[in-house]
Image (cartoon, helix red, strand yellow):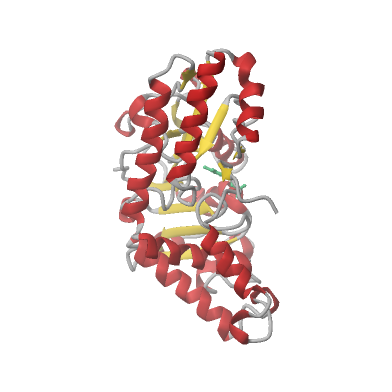
Length: 360
Ligand SMILES: *Cc1c(COP(=O)(O)O)cnc(C)c1O
């Protein structure tokens, strides 16, 4: 087998080798019970213990207050685009949605089928390279919902300021949760799919105020109701047991590595290295407004786009993988989530420097 590559995939993304090895080690015969963790009931004490410990660990990691529910759901972040307005739009006349990149635009598209929207800000006009400050957003107060995406994975732009709104604040943190030291109590509802920062696709973390969850729309089918999931401890039906188990391993890894502030420091260091190199060269371009550049997804283009395919081919040959930008925007993207080590970023910068020397 070839050795492992420097994996810059935007998601599903790389995981720490030691986590993968620990899963491999336990996979066939979990702790000598004679079965794999994916072969036992989610109601079995063995799994229930894992599930509960996973929740405790994530509560500690993010200092989640007692009055918040923590849910492990399926359907990806995308199901949240529908579930949020289905459950909560009835609380107001109109829902405020910020259009700050591809993912928040997708959320808007789904919500617009369910309720009336007020697009409270849009950075479409500048091609999603600069987002208005939150205090400039045009919030309709006859509403219960403000929705935005904190880190736009495709455009590499990130809202770093904390919200301070009267309405309930719902935030897609799929690609930045665990990379930033956030204050959970500033948000009413946080959600993130696992495949960027805490495991395989198919499990989604929801962290939301109990008071809000209890307002879930009662007429909905149970599978779409947050309060039904909360009262069944996310076991309304069979959960993604494997994903939940891997999430637990990742949360243990974060704890062992020193916690979320440490992850944030590393993310800033990794992204600074890339951005300062990009800015020092006329050959590479990052168009995002400086203070909003993502610390998780670094996008860049070549001043001569004819070289894009050469760049991708030659970097790939060096073991620098999955650097192609999203199909909707082109260019390049280096996703540098927590499991991607600093030396991968150093190797990328070395490669970029020699590529420029060769073709610049
Ligand atoms: C990846 C991603 C999604 C989509 O997640 P799915 O699990 O595929 O539904 C949504 N929002 C953001 C910000 C993402 O990065």
